[in-house]
Image (tube, rainbow, N blue to C red; front, side, top):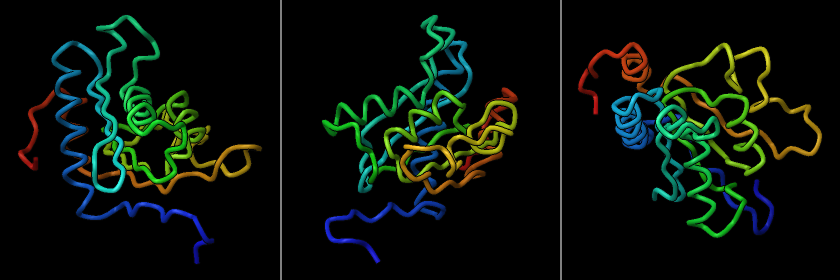
Length: 166
């Protein structure tokens, strides 16, 4: 049961995720076309896109130009707040440590990822800061789903054509 004034967490992990992951895949295609890692991210609030990001580390020569950071930044500006507690972030690959820190600090309620990243991912690596509940002062971890349109996301990283799911 929710306390008075508390917003419900957005639901993640169902068929409703597919259109948003397809958009993230489209953004990842843009990144790949410019020579960047194929990462695209969107932030959704109440079914509406409030932020998008296209990976730009190589093309922009900026180590912080990760798709997830760009999407969170745009969502904060669009909504006029640093609190994204009622938002879900969709990304083609599991967020890295840097992105995971920002996602947690912004209080994003849900993260849906296509592909796991076991080396530097904030969920499935040996440093899971996105889901670690023992970090003092951090907001609660988001609800996490990995593997939505996984084959399509892996295909981008393998530089193969998409299977046509989107």
